[in-house]
Length: 367
Image (cartoon, rainbow, N blue to C red):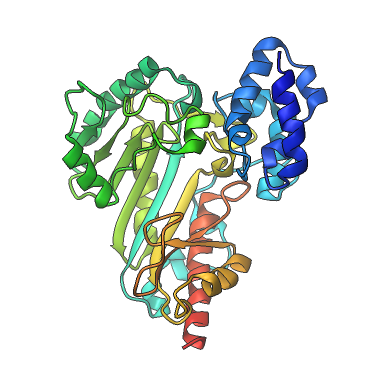
Protein backbone atom coordinates (compact mmCIF):
# COMPACT_ATOMS: atom_id res chain seq x y z
CA UNK A 1 0.00 0.00 0.00
CA UNK A 2 2.83 2.37 0.83
CA UNK A 3 5.42 1.06 -1.63
CA UNK A 4 5.60 4.34 -3.55
CA UNK A 5 5.88 6.44 -0.38
CA UNK A 6 8.54 4.15 1.08
CA UNK A 7 10.55 4.34 -2.15
CA UNK A 8 10.20 8.12 -2.10
CA UNK A 9 11.44 8.27 1.51
CA UNK A 10 14.39 6.01 0.67
CA UNK A 11 15.40 8.29 -2.19
CA UNK A 12 15.03 11.41 -0.05
CA UNK A 13 17.14 9.87 2.70
CA UNK A 14 20.10 9.89 0.34
CA UNK A 15 19.44 13.36 -1.06
CA UNK A 16 18.19 15.36 1.94
CA UNK A 17 20.49 14.86 4.95
CA UNK A 18 18.98 17.90 6.73
CA UNK A 19 15.43 16.46 6.73
CA UNK A 20 15.27 15.03 10.24
CA UNK A 21 12.03 13.08 9.86
CA UNK A 22 13.22 11.38 6.68
CA UNK A 23 16.56 10.50 8.26
CA UNK A 24 14.87 9.07 11.37
CA UNK A 25 12.27 7.02 9.52
CA UNK A 26 12.84 3.27 9.99
CA UNK A 27 11.04 1.02 7.46
CA UNK A 28 11.45 -1.97 9.79
CA UNK A 29 9.62 -0.16 12.60
CA UNK A 30 6.96 1.05 10.14
CA UNK A 31 6.36 -2.57 9.10
CA UNK A 32 5.49 -3.53 12.68
CA UNK A 33 2.58 -1.08 12.77
CA UNK A 34 -1.01 -1.94 11.97
CA UNK A 35 -2.81 -0.32 9.01
CA UNK A 36 -4.35 2.48 11.07
CA UNK A 37 -1.05 3.31 12.78
CA UNK A 38 0.80 3.26 9.46
CA UNK A 39 -1.70 5.74 8.04
CA UNK A 40 -1.29 8.01 11.08
CA UNK A 41 2.51 8.00 10.96
CA UNK A 42 2.58 8.60 7.22
CA UNK A 43 0.29 11.60 7.74
CA UNK A 44 2.80 12.98 10.24
CA UNK A 45 5.56 12.64 7.63
CA UNK A 46 3.66 14.07 4.67
CA UNK A 47 4.94 17.64 4.98
CA UNK A 48 8.56 16.48 4.93
CA UNK A 49 7.92 14.19 1.96
CA UNK A 50 6.13 16.84 -0.07
CA UNK A 51 8.68 19.50 0.95
CA UNK A 52 12.04 17.69 0.86
CA UNK A 53 13.95 20.83 1.88
CA UNK A 54 12.24 20.70 5.30
CA UNK A 55 14.48 20.60 8.33
CA UNK A 56 12.14 18.99 10.87
CA UNK A 57 10.06 17.27 8.20
CA UNK A 58 7.11 16.12 10.32
CA UNK A 59 4.19 17.28 12.44
CA UNK A 60 2.20 15.44 15.09
CA UNK A 61 -1.44 15.07 14.12
CA UNK A 62 -2.96 13.59 17.29
CA UNK A 63 -2.19 14.58 20.91
CA UNK A 64 -0.93 11.04 21.61
CA UNK A 65 1.36 10.76 18.55
CA UNK A 66 4.60 11.46 20.42
CA UNK A 67 3.88 8.65 22.88
CA UNK A 68 2.20 6.26 20.42
CA UNK A 69 5.08 6.53 17.91
CA UNK A 70 7.88 6.95 20.43
CA UNK A 71 10.45 4.85 18.47
CA UNK A 72 10.22 7.37 15.63
CA UNK A 73 9.68 10.62 17.52
CA UNK A 74 12.33 9.90 20.18
CA UNK A 75 14.97 9.76 17.44
CA UNK A 76 13.65 12.87 15.70
CA UNK A 77 13.46 14.83 18.95
CA UNK A 78 16.95 13.76 19.97
CA UNK A 79 18.39 14.91 16.67
CA UNK A 80 16.55 18.23 16.56
CA UNK A 81 16.91 19.23 20.21
CA UNK A 82 20.34 17.61 20.70
CA UNK A 83 19.23 15.53 23.66
CA UNK A 84 19.31 11.83 24.51
CA UNK A 85 16.60 9.61 23.02
CA UNK A 86 15.32 8.82 26.50
CA UNK A 87 15.29 12.49 27.57
CA UNK A 88 12.35 13.58 29.70
CA UNK A 89 11.04 17.12 29.90
CA UNK A 90 10.14 19.08 33.05
CA UNK A 91 8.05 22.26 33.12
CA UNK A 92 8.90 24.92 35.72
CA UNK A 93 7.99 28.64 35.74
CA UNK A 94 9.70 29.41 39.07
CA UNK A 95 12.61 31.81 38.52
CA UNK A 96 14.06 30.90 41.92
CA UNK A 97 15.02 27.57 40.34
CA UNK A 98 17.56 29.35 38.07
CA UNK A 99 21.03 30.28 39.30
CA UNK A 100 22.93 33.45 38.46
CA UNK A 101 20.03 35.89 38.21
CA UNK A 102 19.96 39.44 39.62
CA UNK A 103 18.74 39.99 43.17
CA UNK A 104 15.16 38.85 43.73
CA UNK A 105 15.05 37.53 40.17
CA UNK A 106 14.10 40.87 38.60
CA UNK A 107 15.17 40.76 34.94
CA UNK A 108 15.36 44.51 34.33
CA UNK A 109 17.08 45.40 31.08
CA UNK A 110 17.42 49.00 32.28
CA UNK A 111 20.14 47.66 34.58
CA UNK A 112 22.02 46.71 31.40
CA UNK A 113 21.72 50.27 30.11
CA UNK A 114 18.95 49.50 27.65
CA UNK A 115 15.88 51.65 26.92
CA UNK A 116 12.33 50.22 26.89
CA UNK A 117 12.10 47.45 24.29
CA UNK A 118 9.30 45.50 22.66
CA UNK A 119 9.01 42.32 24.76
CA UNK A 120 6.89 39.28 23.92
CA UNK A 121 6.40 35.85 25.46
CA UNK A 122 4.14 33.29 23.83
CA UNK A 123 3.24 29.64 24.20
CA UNK A 124 1.41 27.10 22.09
CA UNK A 125 -1.35 24.95 23.56
CA UNK A 126 -3.67 22.28 22.18
CA UNK A 127 -6.89 20.95 23.65
CA UNK A 128 -6.59 17.31 24.69
CA UNK A 129 -9.95 16.19 23.27
CA UNK A 130 -9.48 17.37 19.67
CA UNK A 131 -7.12 16.10 16.94
CA UNK A 132 -4.18 18.40 16.35
CA UNK A 133 -4.64 20.88 13.44
CA UNK A 134 -3.03 18.55 10.88
CA UNK A 135 -5.88 16.02 11.22
CA UNK A 136 -8.88 18.22 11.96
CA UNK A 137 -11.97 18.34 9.79
CA UNK A 138 -13.63 21.66 8.99
CA UNK A 139 -16.42 20.84 11.45
CA UNK A 140 -13.88 20.13 14.19
CA UNK A 141 -12.09 23.42 13.56
CA UNK A 142 -15.36 25.32 13.85
CA UNK A 143 -16.37 23.32 16.95
CA UNK A 144 -13.06 24.15 18.64
CA UNK A 145 -13.51 27.85 17.81
CA UNK A 146 -17.05 27.74 19.21
CA UNK A 147 -15.78 26.21 22.44
CA UNK A 148 -13.06 28.83 22.71
CA UNK A 149 -15.52 31.67 22.10
CA UNK A 150 -17.42 30.54 25.20
CA UNK A 151 -14.12 30.41 27.10
CA UNK A 152 -13.11 33.86 25.88
CA UNK A 153 -16.28 35.28 27.39
CA UNK A 154 -14.71 34.54 30.78
CA UNK A 155 -11.76 36.75 29.79
CA UNK A 156 -13.98 39.43 28.26
CA UNK A 157 -15.92 39.64 31.53
CA UNK A 158 -12.68 39.72 33.56
CA UNK A 159 -11.59 43.25 34.61
CA UNK A 160 -7.92 42.46 33.94
CA UNK A 161 -8.56 41.47 30.30
CA UNK A 162 -11.81 42.60 28.67
CA UNK A 163 -11.46 42.85 24.90
CA UNK A 164 -13.16 40.91 22.11
CA UNK A 165 -12.88 37.90 19.82
CA UNK A 166 -12.34 38.43 16.08
CA UNK A 167 -13.29 35.50 13.82
CA UNK A 168 -12.34 34.75 10.23
CA UNK A 169 -14.95 31.99 9.92
CA UNK A 170 -17.65 32.78 7.33
CA UNK A 171 -20.97 33.33 9.08
CA UNK A 172 -19.51 33.56 12.58
CA UNK A 173 -21.24 36.15 14.79
CA UNK A 174 -17.84 37.74 15.41
CA UNK A 175 -16.64 37.60 11.79
CA UNK A 176 -14.51 40.56 10.76
CA UNK A 177 -14.04 42.03 7.30
CA UNK A 178 -10.97 41.47 5.14
CA UNK A 179 -9.91 45.05 5.80
CA UNK A 180 -10.22 44.57 9.56
CA UNK A 181 -8.25 41.33 9.30
CA UNK A 182 -5.47 43.03 7.35
CA UNK A 183 -5.33 45.82 9.93
CA UNK A 184 -4.77 43.23 12.68
CA UNK A 185 -2.10 41.47 10.60
CA UNK A 186 -0.31 44.76 9.94
CA UNK A 187 -0.38 45.49 13.69
CA UNK A 188 1.27 42.07 14.34
CA UNK A 189 -1.80 41.02 16.32
CA UNK A 190 -3.33 38.43 13.97
CA UNK A 191 -1.49 35.66 12.12
CA UNK A 192 -1.08 35.71 8.36
CA UNK A 193 -3.09 33.72 5.80
CA UNK A 194 -1.71 30.17 5.92
CA UNK A 195 -3.43 28.92 2.77
CA UNK A 196 -0.38 29.49 0.55
CA UNK A 197 2.17 27.90 2.91
CA UNK A 198 3.31 24.68 1.21
CA UNK A 199 4.64 23.18 4.46
CA UNK A 200 1.44 23.78 6.43
CA UNK A 201 -0.74 22.72 3.49
CA UNK A 202 1.09 19.40 3.12
CA UNK A 203 0.81 18.90 6.89
CA UNK A 204 -2.96 19.44 6.75
CA UNK A 205 -2.63 22.34 9.18
CA UNK A 206 -3.65 25.03 6.67
CA UNK A 207 -6.66 23.07 5.37
CA UNK A 208 -10.15 24.62 5.42
CA UNK A 209 -8.82 28.18 5.62
CA UNK A 210 -10.26 30.43 7.05
CA UNK A 211 -12.75 28.24 8.96
CA UNK A 212 -12.11 27.96 12.67
CA UNK A 213 -9.54 30.77 12.69
CA UNK A 214 -9.50 33.96 14.69
CA UNK A 215 -7.99 35.73 17.68
CA UNK A 216 -8.95 37.07 21.06
CA UNK A 217 -7.48 40.50 21.89
CA UNK A 218 -7.58 42.12 25.33
CA UNK A 219 -8.67 45.72 25.83
CA UNK A 220 -5.07 46.96 26.04
CA UNK A 221 -4.00 44.76 23.08
CA UNK A 222 -1.18 43.29 25.17
CA UNK A 223 -2.74 39.84 25.70
CA UNK A 224 -3.66 37.84 22.60
CA UNK A 225 -4.81 34.29 21.85
CA UNK A 226 -4.69 32.98 18.30
CA UNK A 227 -7.14 30.21 17.39
CA UNK A 228 -6.51 27.72 14.59
CA UNK A 229 -2.94 28.44 13.56
CA UNK A 230 -0.17 25.79 13.82
CA UNK A 231 -1.54 24.82 17.23
CA UNK A 232 -5.11 25.13 18.48
CA UNK A 233 -4.02 28.11 20.56
CA UNK A 234 -1.09 30.51 20.58
CA UNK A 235 -1.25 32.52 23.79
CA UNK A 236 0.94 35.60 24.11
CA UNK A 237 1.66 38.66 26.21
CA UNK A 238 3.51 41.70 24.91
CA UNK A 239 4.61 45.02 26.31
CA UNK A 240 7.08 47.81 25.67
CA UNK A 241 9.27 48.05 28.73
CA UNK A 242 12.45 46.84 30.40
CA UNK A 243 11.34 44.25 33.00
CA UNK A 244 11.01 40.84 31.35
CA UNK A 245 9.22 39.46 34.40
CA UNK A 246 6.16 41.57 33.58
CA UNK A 247 5.27 39.72 30.36
CA UNK A 248 6.47 36.38 31.75
CA UNK A 249 4.40 36.62 34.94
CA UNK A 250 1.33 37.98 33.16
CA UNK A 251 1.41 35.10 30.68
CA UNK A 252 1.63 32.52 33.48
CA UNK A 253 -1.28 34.16 35.31
CA UNK A 254 -3.36 34.28 32.12
CA UNK A 255 -2.53 30.66 31.31
CA UNK A 256 -3.78 29.62 34.72
CA UNK A 257 -7.00 31.55 34.09
CA UNK A 258 -7.52 29.94 30.66
CA UNK A 259 -6.62 26.45 31.92
CA UNK A 260 -9.14 26.87 34.74
CA UNK A 261 -12.07 27.50 32.38
CA UNK A 262 -14.55 24.62 32.28
CA UNK A 263 -14.18 22.41 29.22
CA UNK A 264 -10.54 23.28 28.53
CA UNK A 265 -7.83 20.70 29.19
CA UNK A 266 -4.46 21.17 27.51
CA UNK A 267 -2.73 18.22 25.86
CA UNK A 268 0.33 17.11 27.85
CA UNK A 269 2.73 14.18 27.76
CA UNK A 270 4.22 12.75 30.96
CA UNK A 271 7.63 12.53 29.28
CA UNK A 272 7.52 15.32 26.70
CA UNK A 273 5.64 18.14 28.43
CA UNK A 274 3.39 20.45 26.40
CA UNK A 275 2.18 18.74 23.21
CA UNK A 276 2.52 20.79 20.02
CA UNK A 277 2.00 20.14 16.33
CA UNK A 278 5.64 20.82 15.46
CA UNK A 279 8.24 18.77 17.36
CA UNK A 280 10.51 21.83 17.45
CA UNK A 281 8.13 23.47 19.94
CA UNK A 282 7.45 20.43 22.13
CA UNK A 283 8.15 20.69 25.86
CA UNK A 284 7.57 24.31 26.85
CA UNK A 285 6.09 25.47 23.52
CA UNK A 286 7.48 28.83 24.63
CA UNK A 287 9.15 31.61 22.69
CA UNK A 288 10.38 34.66 24.60
CA UNK A 289 11.76 37.54 22.53
CA UNK A 290 12.72 41.19 22.47
CA UNK A 291 13.31 43.63 19.62
CA UNK A 292 16.67 45.28 20.09
CA UNK A 293 18.71 47.68 17.97
CA UNK A 294 22.17 46.40 17.01
CA UNK A 295 23.34 49.06 14.51
CA UNK A 296 27.04 48.23 14.85
CA UNK A 297 26.63 44.48 14.41
CA UNK A 298 24.29 45.02 11.44
CA UNK A 299 26.21 47.88 9.82
CA UNK A 300 26.74 45.75 6.69
CA UNK A 301 22.96 45.52 6.23
CA UNK A 302 22.78 41.88 7.33
CA UNK A 303 22.32 40.01 10.59
CA UNK A 304 25.21 37.61 9.95
CA UNK A 305 27.52 39.06 12.63
CA UNK A 306 24.71 39.14 15.16
CA UNK A 307 23.82 35.52 14.37
CA UNK A 308 27.43 34.41 14.71
CA UNK A 309 27.60 35.95 18.19
CA UNK A 310 24.11 34.87 19.24
CA UNK A 311 24.28 31.19 18.24
CA UNK A 312 26.86 30.13 20.89
CA UNK A 313 24.67 31.93 23.43
CA UNK A 314 21.71 29.75 22.43
CA UNK A 315 19.90 32.69 20.84
CA UNK A 316 18.12 32.97 17.50
CA UNK A 317 18.18 36.19 15.48
CA UNK A 318 15.26 37.08 13.19
CA UNK A 319 14.02 40.14 11.37
CA UNK A 320 11.80 42.50 13.29
CA UNK A 321 8.74 41.11 11.48
CA UNK A 322 9.51 37.51 12.40
CA UNK A 323 11.11 34.57 10.68
CA UNK A 324 12.32 35.17 7.10
CA UNK A 325 11.86 38.95 7.35
CA UNK A 326 14.65 41.55 6.94
CA UNK A 327 16.29 43.42 9.79
CA UNK A 328 15.00 46.90 10.52
CA UNK A 329 16.59 49.91 8.84
CA UNK A 330 17.82 51.01 12.26
CA UNK A 331 19.39 47.61 12.96
CA UNK A 332 16.43 46.25 14.90
CA UNK A 333 16.39 42.48 15.21
CA UNK A 334 14.28 39.96 17.10
CA UNK A 335 16.27 37.97 19.69
CA UNK A 336 14.99 34.82 21.40
CA UNK A 337 16.41 31.65 23.02
CA UNK A 338 16.39 28.71 20.60
CA UNK A 339 15.66 25.88 23.05
CA UNK A 340 12.12 24.69 23.81
CA UNK A 341 12.60 21.07 24.97
CA UNK A 342 14.45 19.80 28.06
CA UNK A 343 14.64 23.35 29.34
CA UNK A 344 12.20 25.00 31.74
CA UNK A 345 10.12 28.09 31.13
CA UNK A 346 12.11 29.88 33.84
CA UNK A 347 15.39 28.93 32.15
CA UNK A 348 14.16 30.30 28.80
CA UNK A 349 13.35 33.78 30.13
CA UNK A 350 16.61 33.78 32.13
CA UNK A 351 18.58 32.78 29.02
CA UNK A 352 17.03 35.68 27.14
CA UNK A 353 18.12 38.16 29.80
CA UNK A 354 21.65 36.78 30.07
CA UNK A 355 21.99 36.59 26.28
CA UNK A 356 20.89 40.19 25.82
CA UNK A 357 23.54 41.29 28.34
CA UNK A 358 26.29 39.51 26.39
CA UNK A 359 24.99 40.66 23.00
CA UNK A 360 24.85 44.28 24.19
CA UNK A 361 28.50 44.05 25.25
CA UNK A 362 29.46 42.75 21.79
CA UNK A 363 27.45 45.55 20.14
CA UNK A 364 29.33 48.17 22.16
CA UNK A 365 32.68 46.53 21.37
CA UNK A 366 31.83 46.69 17.64
CA UNK A 367 31.16 50.43 17.82
